Image (cartoon, rainbow, N blue to C red):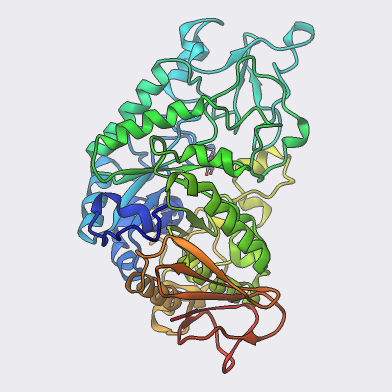
Amino acid sequence: MRRSSDPRPEIADESAWWRDAVFYQVYVRSFADSDSDGVGDLDGVRSRLGYLELLGVDALWLTPFYPSPMADHGYDVADPRDVDPLFGDLAAFDRLVAQAHEHDIRVTVDLVPNHTSDRHEWFRAALRSAPGSHERERYFFRDGRGHAGEQPPNNWTSVFGGPAWTRVPDGQWYLHLFAPEQPDLNWEHPDVPADLARTLRFWLDRGVDGFRVDVAHGMAKPRGLPDMDPRAAVPGVLHDNAVDPRFDNDAVHEVHRMIRKVVDEYPGRMAIGEVWVKEDERFARYVRPDELHLGFNFRLVQAPFDADAVRAAVEHSLAAVQPHGTPPTWTLSNHDVTRHVTRYGGGSLGVRRARAMALVQLALPGVVYLYNGEELGLPNVELPDWALQDPTWLRSGRTERGRDGCRVPLPWEGDAPPFGFTAGAGTWLPQPGDWAGLTVESQLEDPGSVLSFYRQALELRRSHGAISGDEVEWYGAPAGCFAFRRKGGGLICALNTSGGPVPLPPGEVLLSSGPMDDNRLPPDTAVWLV
Ligand code: GLC
Ligand code: MG
């Protein structure tokens, strides 16, 4: 992080545009549908660029749109250098990038280097080949343990539940840390990094501004594939390499150095890694100056709506990037977690708290990632069993409901499903019937809506020092509250998670997340002051 005494280059350093950018995650399946099949697609995204500009975001992260059998909705990639017909084609992608740039919005895409689809040509070739063949070396094929090799080679579990190994007809097993349709690549095989470099250049040449690296703490596996501590197999936690050899192995940093080298051949491009790693020092390694430009940090996702917990999350996040001067990143929701309106209690309370946390997130130094629909205050959806599609649901023997509830298609306009998401009859996941008040159209007209609030906050963030003050200074605050300012920036942000109103810090209110109570900050509310 820059010292506050450093001379402040005004934003002029365009080559590091991401350092304080607001990214908007487009879950492509669920954003907007252009061809009436009920599934969002690239032309759908393009048709809504005007909205994204109005909202005021700087860049998009598009979730995978590559050819895929969709066992994990595109995170099972069969060909990383093409577009699945469900989402469009390469021409549609080029149109989207060109028009996004005209709207001054940058475009980043997902990379999935830990695994491929089981329909990828390499895996098909591996299945056709004999044990020990070159083709099998690109993945992890092993003999089993026990009588006739009937037990998996080790005790690793899949993140989606069940064993991380699947047996093939000739008796060998292959490794998949996710679904069986997502075999893990062997990063020690030279074809694997060579192919990723080719994929990077393919999209960089087409004009993308950067990448989001899926499972950036995956890829490298320890020699001998030692057993894991079974207690580490809790889903949704930050991984601890001390007990879990599946993730965060040291050799992964070679991969990130390679990615960085290629990306840096193209000025002004960036990469952010998905890093579910527990220890700050282990996290820090991913954002060394010759590795990823940014690391996703999930501390805010994991923190309850409680000032002490949020402050601890902020301090950990800052500590983890501080050694290398890397900007921190702030995320409240994404396509893998329960939407935060629901995490914070749901209903109007959840929305009130979500608005408060938006002000916290947007006042912090560094980079913000918004997940599509959070600017509308969307809750997680309780879907009926028949609608669920997530591999977590299918592989847990239908006990874990999985991630579909945060992936329901966005409501754009009108009084009833499909709310303008598609001109077709249905949507790939059913939308609740009562979302008419949450549509983009209805919220744009209402100055008190969550959407209008986000637009205001994003605009003020731009005009009030999004670019100044990389360090956070905390003030004394009543129990259940905090207040901070970015050193060198003017704005103070105060949050109240205590049960009752508290006195406001001195200053003029620039924006509040909810109605104010004279000179007091009401509970479940945050405020920006100057
Ligand atoms: C990442 C993605 C998630 C996907 C998994 C396997 O965690 O965010 O959606 O299922 O990787 O690729
Ligand atoms: Mg479509």
